[in-house]
Length: 243
Image 1 (cartoon, rainbow, N blue to C red):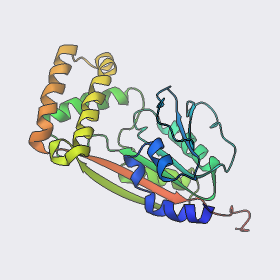
Image 2 (cartoon, one colour):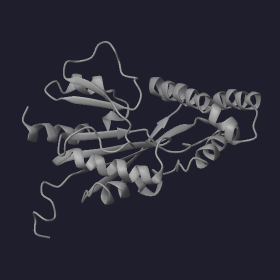
Image 3 (tube, rainbow, N blue to C red):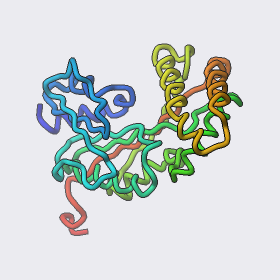
Image 4 (cartoon, helix red, strand yellow):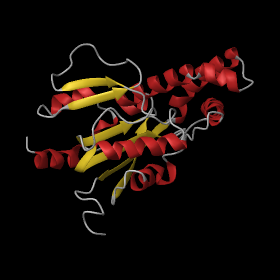
């Protein structure tokens, strides 16, 4: 596949990785090389397309393990709870560095609490937000087009698009909604140690609140909010254009 044709296809594909895996992307773009990166060894061990590979690396530790101008399309998602503001700036600069001139960069993050939450659900989220705040993490970085600003200022993209996606959570959202609810509850439980460490809530109280919030999701017809920011790296630098 010619690179120009590949980039044209990406313009139609750009919002789909919100719910697609690396292996699914590799299967769709059979002539592309797809590289997945994570700090933990959580990669699939079976049914991996031959054009898909995985690299273990911590984003905030120095440079990404790739040369300048390596990739046509760089996609990062759901690191809201893992990066502090200074780390966000470093990581996005690195994404810009490894993207080829004329290539695309996309960031996708979830909103810190979503919408249509009942009081019990918000109680759980508030405990989690307080715990994150003690770590210097901004759970609302996607709001006010924060991702767009990062791509403009740190990756130096001249024209960045920003979209907001709303996906129903729970049974009223169909299969995807059920998966979102399952992931949300699993995330709440995974946050238990940090919440207990950073607040006065007891383990029993927090577990009860999660159980009540899980039921409330269906009652209030809650939804997830995803923020997507994406743009194209210039073919030439400002110096090359004599600006």
